[in-house]
Amino acid sequence: MKKVALSLAGALAAVAFAPEAAAAPAFARQTGMACSACHAQHFPVLNGFGRAFKAGGYTMIGGQEKIEGDHISLPSVLNASIIMKIRYQKDNTTAPDGSGTKLPQTKGSGELQFFDEFALMMGGRVAENVGFLLEGQMIDPSGPFAAGFKMPFVFDMGGAKLSVVPFETDALGAAYGYELSSGGIMRANRWSEHRLETSAVQYNSNIGGAATGIAFAAQNDMGWINVTRYAAVQGGGSDLASTFVRLAVTPTIADWAIVAGVGNMSGSSFDGGLEVATEQTFVDFQAHGEVGGMEAGVYAQYATAPVNTAMTNVYNITQSAGVTIDGVTDRKAMTIGADFTVIPHVLSLGAAYRMAENGLAANVNGDDAITLNVVYDLHQNVALHAIYSTYSGSYYDANPTKATNLLTLMLEAAW
Image (cartoon, rainbow, N blue to C red):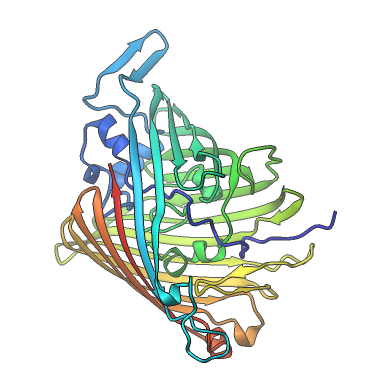
């Protein structure tokens, strides 16, 4: 069978119904703590305590009753949450003849996406050193209920934690197994809903994001290292022939909590007879602190996904503006953004800039973006989002009928 390379430079836009759970009231129930105990600024941004809870495999219990005995330690109830997103999206997509006519059933005419996400999340403690997270999608009746699942086994070695995490996901990629940052290395943990515009890693990983594998991680106060073997498929028979290696440090400098690291995805695996080349290298930085008494987050990433010359190049790169093309050059992106909390745990304002090359020929591959981001928390678990991105570069100069802006209005709630 002919091999087809579908690089992490892009292929197949991620399915719209994929759960991307941010807030998890199931964990609030288990720990007896408010959502803000684990999250800085707004969901899904993790603070230091949230990273520690996640690194501990979701096992910490607060005031909730436990069932305990020899070789058993369980919460007295199975903790669950419902995650919901309702979005309205509009861009300036027009007819390909340049007439300016708005096309039906596109964002050019405005789309109410009800639901963009609707999922049942269950998670928490299985044993003293074993936890779990299940994301059950409730939108697509033909798809599997278990859109995502992982079960961290965490071994306390005194000053460090060693984790083994079997996992599978339909859309969140290899980093779903183990990732503690909030800049978008793992799709669900991103500070802005417009992930392709604010995360270079997500821009270069614009693929369906299915992954099944096992993450092996070591973490302490200085940072973590994660080596994951995985296949770019969800569940089923998986060859685990791809590798994700991630190293991050977590110092505190002048009262700023830093996460800085590097990562590499390599190898290839088969998905229904197609050979998927999982290649990307990135560096990332995030810092959480205060500016003028206001909470602030700063994020920067650089990522590159090379053209795969060993196999047939069929990239089907899907742009943020909604066009599918074949890649012929390396795909590169740099993103930088900042998020400021104007009213603590209520109103946050952010902005980001992306400079990217989308994989086309060198004279038509410029794909830059400017994004403005507003999050208003009605409650700790109910938020309103408004995000606006505008696009420019040589790709749009060569394709004047393509959308050059995107507006997203979203209601997000979890309970």
